[in-house]
Image (cartoon, rainbow, N blue to C red; front, side, top):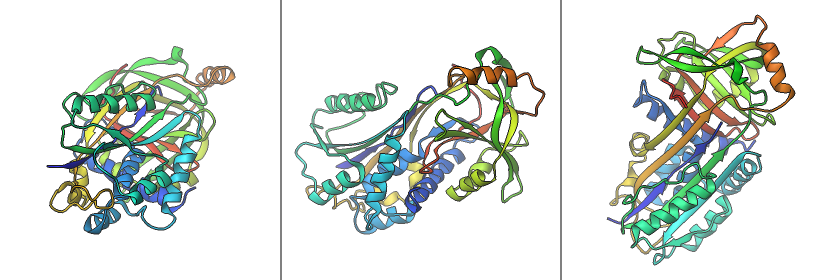
Length: 391
């Protein structure tokens, strides 16, 4: 079977564009919800932006019913007039952000010719041009792809594909790499980090290194449509254009899927308009997450099964040489959250504030986190922490 392989990847190490970005965010959140529902009680991490980007590259090559399935499931079509320009502007805005690197790659079998229209569409929307690869030598192709991934994730993901993961039937690999590295605007003082107990989703308690910071935060309390109370606190990164949103239910026995099901781009915008700047002491675990997921099942559940079926998949806008279908959609994410932040006066302010008697927000139970680029609204990374993995 000749198949189109799509691979996604994103990495977070160390810790405006209108309707298109809203639609991409909503699509990414739906994929996350599918993953979370099948991983209740487990840690999950993914890049909503990465998912939307690489599937948009596939969407550009879709025709007929396959194109209609993409448009229905994703809520937008890059084949529509002006949408490619919005995609290009989004990628440009993110890439110009200090600490953020995003790149798109296309690896194509050297003997297969791509339609000129597809080449132009990739160049216009993603500023990328196909690289010819000899997939009759699969292990060599794996090495080439892994080198590309490593280069565009600052070495954080050195071996994305394992030996034997490609075959001589591979014809095309679409890639999106996202690397993020930023300092907290106000760092957590390592001297204030203490071992405390974290109440995991499975009912057990585990010791964690709990970081503490007392400062002024944007904070708000909200209620889901089903009446579940939860709070949101924003922790900004240096420069204020990126931040982490921490979302947790008031009651420790409420599953995080209850909050995930209520999420969309409009809800996140609502948070931002209603958060109030208040003084709080924040306690959050120092944690790392390593996630590798196959997104085929979530995408099937979202109505994209057509593209996985060789008999029904229509990617004739990519090539007329052979019939293609999607074989795999994978994503790997690495996340590390620790005390590092800006240096100097801000650290002193944290130590002073930590001695003040203010209300404490202690995330000693499962919580969601979202890393958002404020200008575009893009959700670069998202995850649920049910049980911290210590560094």
